Length: 386
Image 1 (cartoon, rainbow, N blue to C red):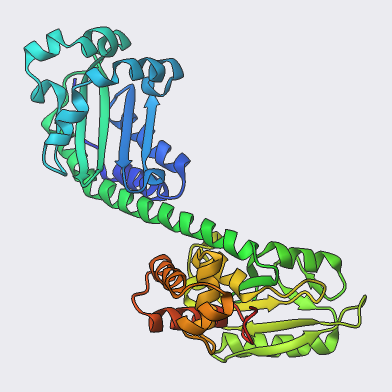
Image 2 (cartoon, rainbow, N blue to C red):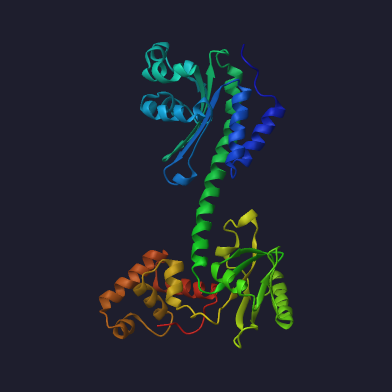
């Protein structure tokens, strides 16, 4: 006997788990298991492929299809499985079943069905086309056994009712993974800086601390970081100034600089507290917190980084292109840069073309504005290291 479509309470629970599944694979699996149970099916599958963002792709199965030996055997028969192509050919947002979309003769003679699908105790698939466009597609499938009757019109309609939500979840998941990839790349760049760097949330608690800042804090000679992530200078006078500048930034001010004394050296730590550059404000920090202030601490024991190193790391420029970009922001033009470096004007023009291509800028003036902005954002002003 065919089951009734999902009631409102069950559908609400499934939707809740699905949306939590954007960032939580366990919640997504739970939603798929609830769907299989609701439709009295021993197995269900959710497949999404994205040629542009492979990391955002997804293959998730429950029940029989989640068993390792079944998955291994499926790979041997995958090319013979007619269902994915047939489901992908129906209109986006619609659903149907293999009994309805395939002729009885095809079902009876299918090598895939006879050698793989039916020996598992399965007899029919209810599938929906969630998305199909430009190298991306997504399907959902529910697999019934002979223990229950054929899928009904009401059950097909229930899957179609879920389709808009499933498409939206895929979009959100794609955006989430793109954001995670961007965040990972950005953190790698920040971790490579020799200066200590912290991003603080709007309460003043650290949401990101690079490796150099961790090393400075661990020395215990100038700063301490409490369990809640609040960084403070150990010196009381410096602490008062630090908190004042932080308060200024949090309320829309420009912030400023101070020197934090060290208990082990006569040389203090130069500290800059500033607004967060737009590129760092909301790239997906832990627990989705927004960055409210940027703190940069220069380690007096380390060599101050050459500005060309910063451009190489942040803009992915080769050394020659980075040196040229800095020179153009100073007193040089292409000719004087070439003469000073002992290279031909053709080589200088090659460095300029490389810098424009790597940064996505179109003119020398655009490139200069970008370089100045990067150096300002990372508080590395002053005369360029040659």
